[in-house]
Image 1: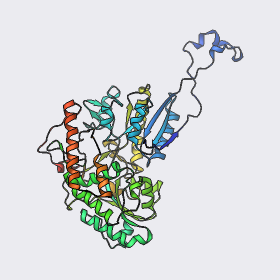
Image 2 (image 1 turned 90 degrees about the horizontal axis):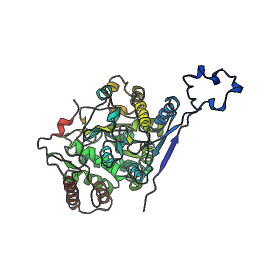
Image 3 (image 1 turned 135 degrees about the vertical axis):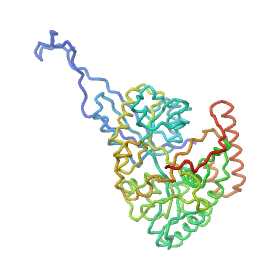
Image 4 (image 1 turned 30 degrees about the vertical axis):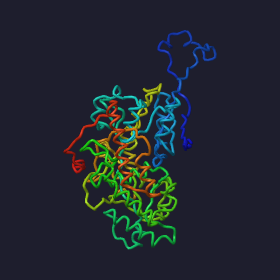
Length: 463
């Protein structure tokens, strides 16, 4: 059964049209001296053909702002280019696959640090090297395996996101909790305490938007694993092999909260926006998410409670690795577009200092461009302080992307959390299937790996 893909389409039309310039020799031509009523039909102004582009994004928290930016581009680009912005509300990556398979791919695509490499490998993205001059290369960071893959540039960094524990200060105080948890054990205990004092009014200690386990469980387990010294996506850079053993205590803790009844009922079918709505109403004690949340609670779902953000807990309370400062709404040009030059013009507009600086200052995302972050004001938005990059944040190397037979890790862990099973066997099975897929990819030459015995996740932290 094919899952329906929700779509919100935002199309901003140009007001009026642009008249073409007259001929250079119009002053000496016979038609030029004729009265308007006597001018031949061939002298009528010729409208420049409109170029229509489609831009797909999966981000909703900044939807209104980006809509206004697109509108401004449409009204001011001077080349009769019109961009239609399409916000895919569910299963963005699947929607991209279907679009390319059916020949209906967009012209510009929002990519992220975990999608740019597979999209490039599938041939979805067009290299942008021919558009880059020295000034652009100097201004925007070049990160191998992120925006530069196999020597080719596919995007430019603009916004990044940190991951934090988002918590309801009022529920914490009501439960007698004086500080956010620093260990997994404390997180489980705090969720139980919050549920005990809040259940009568419909409040619970913890939630995740499990309608999309790959993003919800993936981000939550990932950042805890990273802070605890493990590769957040299960790849061990020291051995160049997949190893999900470090996730055992993390997934066990999540399951314990489910078993304790400390999690929001029905969260297995919950999407991110309904979760945010519940949190804003005071029904959730804590969850893990990105630095886009302050903007959400200021604009999309005005929070009716006092809330804050804090570093995620680690397995034992000790920080043993950097937490990812993730690439956010980067832009790439589709490899199938017939209007690459116009798509690049739109990208240039989206990467102007005005757009980047305003985006940062409104709290939608944190700038990854040094020249912008150096002059941008700290976002004047409630809750942003807990998300600002600190010394514990950093950029992890990109792990190899493989095609796994059978259930993916997040789905397997989610099934265990809801239905139970033998976690040790689940992890052994994941290790085998992921490493089998890795070996096949290496043998085919689509993936290159190199063990790094000296790899130290503490050295990834920002200075």
